[in-house]
Amino acid sequence: MFSTLDNGIFASWGFSFIVLLARMARPRVDTLGRLALATFNRKSDKSDDSIPKYAFVPLEDPSFTTVETPPEGIVIFRFTESLTFPNSNYIDDSIVEYIELHTRRLYKRAVKKDDQPWNETDGLVDAAENEKLLPLRAVIYDFSAISYVDTSGFQALIDVRKAVNKHAAREVEYHFVNILDERVQNALIRADFGRQIPIITESINEKTENNIEEGIEFPKTNKRFFHLTIEEAIVEAQS
Image (tube, rainbow, N blue to C red; front, side, top):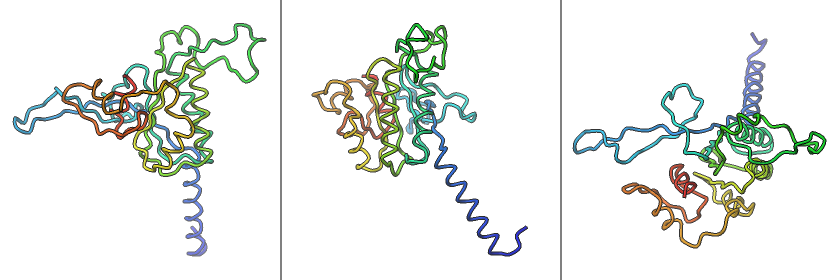
């Protein structure tokens, strides 16, 4: 197929580079649901449903037919690539579009077309369908696959927050799970993530323990909006 071995090697390198750029520029943004897992008592070898356990998998994956949607008003996103300049706009648009399609719009748009700002659309869902949707309470981001976030990536998250808060007509909570780099967490704090609501005086350990089912324990972080597990983030978002 190639005239020389060198040409074949260069062509394969070029193709791999193009695939890598495509993955970076158009990464998957998975919306997660809960998959109930059967738990067994080792002493009796019987199923134990007293303590529910979940795996979090993509809602649109056809392999998981029994996946449940997250609790009401909560949306969970898992990124599959680092947040960088090539993909920041795409990720921004993907998240905002999903939220506008699946949660209730509470922002009141201009009644007259002439009064509508030039950059405001009519929305992705009509009024009748919009009333059937649930309001958004919290967004959970799973950062387990993210090793790096550049300035454009942080700006994309800020832009998402601005658009989502407008859509929900309130300050939505944003929770982060499995952040691998403490510098990323510190940068998010500097960007005011986690400061939209009044400061909670009690510690996260005390607040979470008061709202979880008896017998369930979660490893705790020392910051309310940063978590080690998605289940911990859900509990905090519901509190």
